[in-house]
Amino acid sequence: MQQQIILGSIVCCASFLLIILIIGWDVVEVTNWGLKCNSLSKQCDKQIYAPGRYLVGPFNSFFNFPGSRQTIEFSDDKRAQSQPLKTRTAEGLTLSLHVSFQYQLIKNEIASLYALNGLNYEATFIRMARDTILQAAGKFEAPKYWTNRRNITHVMQNQLQDELKKAHANCVSLQILDIDLPDQYENSIVQTQIEVQKKTMKQFEQRAQMILNDILVMRAENDQEIFAIHAQAQADAFTITQSAQAKANKLLLEAESKGYEMIQKNLDLSQEEFNQYLFWNSVLKQKKAKLVFNPNTVLTYNMNHN
Image: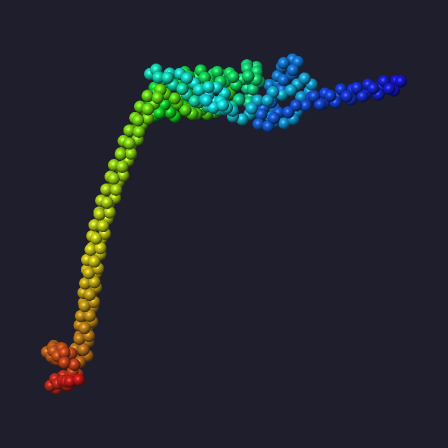
């Protein structure tokens, strides 16, 4: 009997431990951050858990918070969290804005976020975004939404970031999806923008024509420069050729002069005899004759009549 009681106690303890093990596990989903809270005491740990399975013990569980960027949209889309924002421009025109923004929770402040809003924090973000964007939108005149849309977007994002920071989140980006103004005024703005575009295109065409004219002038100048360079090159070539020819003639004359000096010296001719030699040598060159010269006899020559 006593053994049965002991066995029963063991079975009960084992079952109790098994139940504790089963209910003592919890999971932080992928791309989420986990905040562990106790369902009895309503107290939460300050530690933030990464995705995974953890042994948290009885009466403890995780609240999952998104670790990735989340989008809130104000538009007519069925997936949007709220309707378009309606306000007035600085000059009093009705304005309907379709806006979306992306927020990301600050990981180390998730416990403070839960203490402030529980799990309904996104409703707080929507309310803060609506008030902030409407307040910023009313400070701009209607034409600015066409001509300076990027700057307006930047202003709205910075102001929304300041507000969300107080609620333990960051405004990562913001987009103005669509702008609705009164039809008559919107048509007027569209026409104004068309005229501006036409004026801009005309300026581009004039600038392109000026560039084309500059190219034609540069081409004419280049052609003239090429012609001048070519003419100068021909003149330089002629000068070089004439100079070379003159040098060649000079060298030839110097060679002949030295040759004649050697002849006069070797034959021991007087100046008068040498002059006769030069005379008859030139005559023979013209008539193709052979010169037979003896300084002691009369100068003779044989004619070649071939």
